[in-house]
Image 1 (cartoon, rainbow, N blue to C red):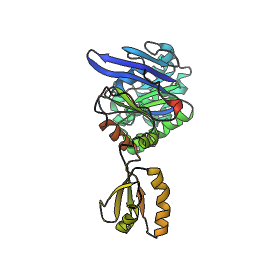
Image 2: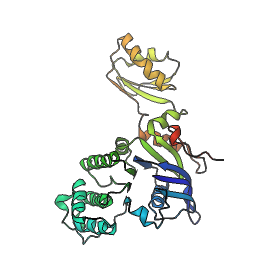
Image 3: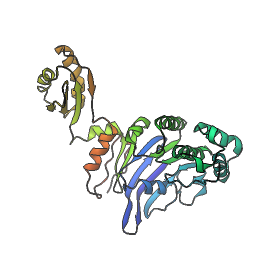
Image 4: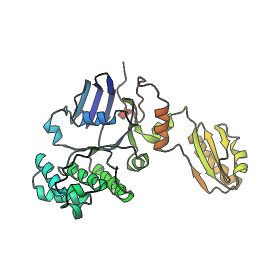
Length: 324
């Protein structure tokens, strides 16, 4: 649904997005990166607010810049707060629904407001809304015209834990209907519960695209860490140290050990039998590296130069075009 082909955007001498190529299809894709990584510029290119300096951006096989045909099929929730404080939530969503050419506005507005849980506050002035309520009403206007593509910049900001769970459930519901959803967020824990498919930006470059667990398995320069809780930590360590793919073992606290392995799949296959045969009781087992935060940290800290070529992870059908 969305394609970028060697796309760059420059602001004078400043690089916003540098030679990015990727394709985004149905489902939820998280756009991640530290501040200044180029996330906002990339979203503005996709939503047609900016024209690329070089390269090409297409949405539904059309260039989105100043293209009403694309805008009618796209919902957008910007991070910036620019609501009309003198309007009620219902009036705000109705105005944007009318601008999008929605038919049966009253019913559709009521439905979208109900979906985001704002029915009780819909007729209050936006100026009196909390940040979380403003966030919800922005999402309501983004889905009121039933778009095929939904772009959300930091949609979880300002929401309490319950509100975040509801927002994630809403986005998952939209994705199940075959919509393409791009979410920019810095709340890595919430993103990990939302989707496993990511685009990781750093200094204007695309560092990685694909499933976070596939990405982590390919970062072989970092051994996988595995944490084990057991009252017999040192006895277990004596058995583990004999495995050729266990590189190191340490004891961070009483009743636990943390090891590094160069072959996580082989370790996970061997560990259950080793524990059962030894009779050692294991009360906890976890890998602090099998999460989005670890992937994010390893990729960003290991790519200090903005001119390094982008790395693509994932199944071949999602691979990016190779550079000449």
